[in-house]
Structure formats: C-alpha cells, structure tokens
Length: 386
Image 1 (tube, rainbow, N blue to C red):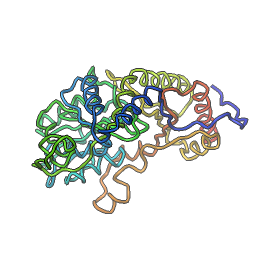
Image 2: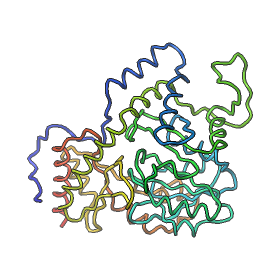
Image 3: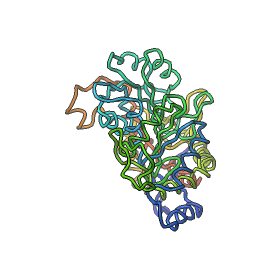
Image 4: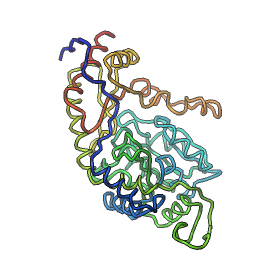
C-alpha cells in the first residue's frame, strides 16, 4: 500500500486506549452505592469472585485492589518469602519484579524468547538454584508465553509456577485458559485491561491452602468472620494487610465480565484489521499468539525492523494526534532502582525486543478509519526513515 498523504485537521485525536462502558456499568455501581452500606465488602465482591471462578473454571478467585497486590498476595499464598529467589522476565511492567521484593524474596531475571516475548524455558533452567522457590512468567500483550514448557521446568525442579496473566484474560494456550495452568495466577483489572474496573486484581488458584493464605493476607490475617459483620474484634492468626476490593469496584467488574466475550471480540476484530493493513508495510511485524494459542490483544504491538527509527515513528504519530507507547523500554533490569542494587544481567533478546517494539491504539470500539490513520502514520514514518 502507499502511504496516505497527511493533510492535517484530522477529526479527533486517537487515544492509546478507550474504556468501553455501558449503562449496565452505571446501574451496577449505582446499585452498590444506593444500598447504603457494605461499600467496603458487599454482595458484589462475592458475585464477582464467583463469576471469575465460573469463567475460568477454577476453584478460587480472590479479588484485591490491584494487579500488583494480586502478585504479592499470590506469592504470599505460595509461601514465597525471605531467602527465596523467584525467576522473572525483565521484559515486563516493573510490578512483576517489585512484587517479588515486596514479598521479601529476590527477583532473578532470565531472558525471553523471540516468538512470544515471554520467558525462555532454557534461560529459566539456567537460572534455577537451591534458593529458587517459583517461576513467574508474564503473558505479554494478550497472548500466551511458552507456559506449558515453563510448567514442565517448574515440575521437574519442584518449584511453584505463578502466572502473571494481567494482560491475558480470556486467552488460551493449547485449549487452556491463561491463569489456569500454574499453581496460581494474578489478574489485573486496571483501566486499560480486558476487564477494566479502574484498579483491581485477583488471585486465582485450585489450591485450597494457597487460597486460604491469600484470604488471610488480604485482610490483616483475620481468621474469623468479616470485620464489619462481627461484634468482636476478631482473631488474627497471620501477618497481613488491607488489599480488599470495594463492593463498588466489584459491581463494575461484574458488569464488565458479563460483556467480556464481546469486549474480546471487538479487540480481535480491530487486531485483524490492523494485521491485514500492516501486511503490506515493510519493516513491521505484529505480535502474534503462538501455535495452538489465541490472542485477546490487550495491546496491539508491532516489532519494527532494526533500521527503523522508532522515535521518529512515535513523533510522526504524535504530530497526527495518534497516541503510541513503548511497553517496555527500558526493561526492568535497566531501570535505576535495579541497576543500583544488583549486577546487570546479560539479557540480549530482552534488550533487542525492548528496543524495537511499539504499541498503537487498541480498544474494542476503535473505528476502521482510525486504524487506517494509524497504519498510514506508521508507514509514512517508515518511508521517511528509508
């Protein structure tokens, strides 16, 4: 295709993401508010947990106030703490590594592989030591990493497998929904995720003991009935904190989850249009699901050829009022906090991919004309770089 001549005066800016909300969202939150009580913990919390359990076919879904605290709570549930190491990718949002530190353990960075941008099982195997307690892979952008291979590594070495499925709700790997393959998984409902509630997260697991520990941790280690329902101060049997999800947030989650299949279908429709149009644009390779997997496109990300000036592409899009963002550069091991605290590991694939990826606008109701504007902007920038 030929680049579209940019004439200026485009009708509207194109945001990186836009929340798809409906009147049912307002009605659910209003119902929670108008009840006049149980805003901190109410019936929508239990309903949201039950709906997640039903959707994923898991025994336990425990909602919390963010995806980050879901990771910390899951690590606590797995018994990970001081003296332990957890193998993580550096190509991820910093919360993945920070959660390990917040749980008292040490993150150990392993390299990723080029197809999925997820942890490379061979690199993970090389990082395992006697102190390794868990492997924490990330499902990037809405598609699976090599999770089955990582599960085999975890099983062989007798360590836990915790999935960071923040971006992959509803996606599958070989017929299994992401978040249901490891010992536990952390979900996120941040405002740009598949199910947005503003902020929020959940720990999902089939393990009763993990679930029990998470329940204690998210509510100050309280082992007796809910604080607001009891006349007594309660019995506290473990160290914990308050990371509960509010009833109003859960109400929004219930409403969004009721429409999740349509939300995913909208993203997949948009991704199909993007991929079709980028097929004729040289030097651009869209991120895709591995064989046997599905992609829910929480982000639509492309990899630019090494000779392309990514900064110029971003600048060109900005000039056309089109948002774009790099997830993630620098990768975590190059951030100031981690550079100052440990020797920088050699992660060549991570560094290469981080230098070349670019995420463009993606949301369920993005218009075909907006997608065409995005692709035209990218192509114009690439032609200028050639």
